[in-house]
Image (tube, rainbow over all chains, first blue to last red; front, side, top):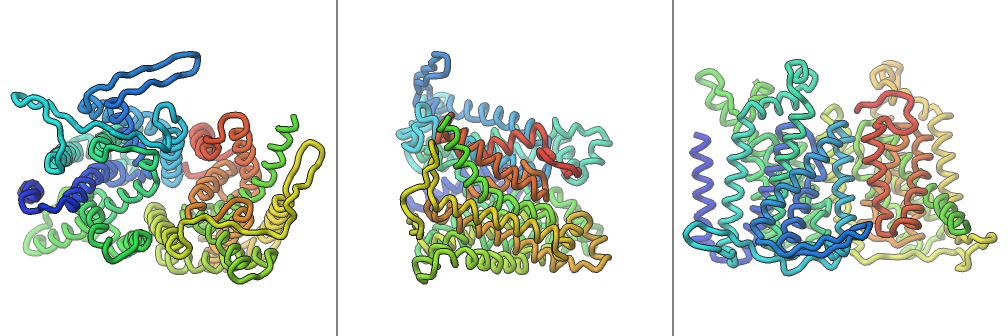
Length: 348
Length: 290
């Protein structure tokens, strides 16, 4: 039943370009899709391990910079007279490197920041993102600083039998983002339902108990951080080759907050949550733009985040699932919904 | 050497206001266990109150500081009553996210009302700095240091010598026992948040005229405040004061001898280093949730 819904959604999303011709809306959908991928990766940490990482944009930004620099090439001096000269490589290599480097950063950050929990974890992750932003701003030789990396090449994909395909149109980019989003969704879904996923959720619900049954906390959390950072890096790479200009503002805290709002609104710990929340908050600016100034929009976002937390603290998807499960459970025994087992139990 | 002395003077001025920021946050964090993301907005708010009082209402510069403190107190109390009181007992992540929502809304509100153009406040102090041998310091900065020192002393006395302060300390140690002893915990929470907010507003009102005033000025201030709290240890006022001066020194030396571009990175690096190597803070006596 759930997989039918998922397939239906994919078909619906795939059909969008056939009836939607407006380039502005297509653009909004593509950037929304990229942010949804980021939000899904954030949800892996926030929703399934319970760690609120507020530095998530760092991995997105690192992915964007790595991918852009790989495909643009650079020539940078290092201390002690070393120089690195890098000739441009194809964007697809940049995409892969973005995942690898972001994942590595996720490993390092995870190793260091999982020593602390709660508020301290949040503050360490924020600090990490800000340090990365300041490096991007000040290492002008590599990143051009505030002048931004411009003319980032378009994404090129080698297709078997068709040769290289350069993604020039919005249509092509839309399908690329959709494909990556679907792969991400499936990957996270498999992960969450695996042994590893149960370990993660065990940790979230009761760390002491999880340790006592033999779950390796640091290993589980670090692995989750690596995967999450790698996916965010992939999203950043897509962003770099679609927008084609990257400046240190990509690391702005407000971008992390956008992802957090998407996850919280849709429902953390729910696979579909970030997609639903992402569609709402990704497309809301499109509809609010004619009637509200951008500042007023942000006031509204802040307000919506507060209201959601007060009224619907579980988020939209789990609340709906709960209602659905309750209705079905009346005649017979409760059918547990996979991702909200805990919430069902709490309510029962 | 004279350059180093100049850095020390600047450190004293900066450190005083950082200490104010840190004390406010460490009280809120320590007593209420709330990660207060609106702290930076209160700082911005204090600076704008300074601007409004001096330039739009034309009232005396020296009267603007107490007015900013009062306004910060009221806004802080309002935030606590509307957002935090209903959330009492919910997990720390939820309050944290609500405070992020409040911060986004309030900062965008400031941008909406006052616009993004930076504003500066004219002060009654002479342009020429006070020259003491090899170093010089402007009269405005001296006033900032004096006012900050005065506010730190007042806060210290409030916490350590008054009945309210005693109740706050009791609540910090054990909320339930304090409640059993007749402490009105709700009132303590509101007072704590209001006092912390008024200190942030005071810091903004003091540093606003030194630099320029713009809606996002509080973001960095908030992070610095977090760095100070982490340095000094949770709920530790003396630690917050020392942490404020250490951060100011690190920034001055970092900007002077490394690169001015990384000045603001110092706070973050301190946070990361302290949490990795000594997560209880430099001056912690009691244990802390790690």
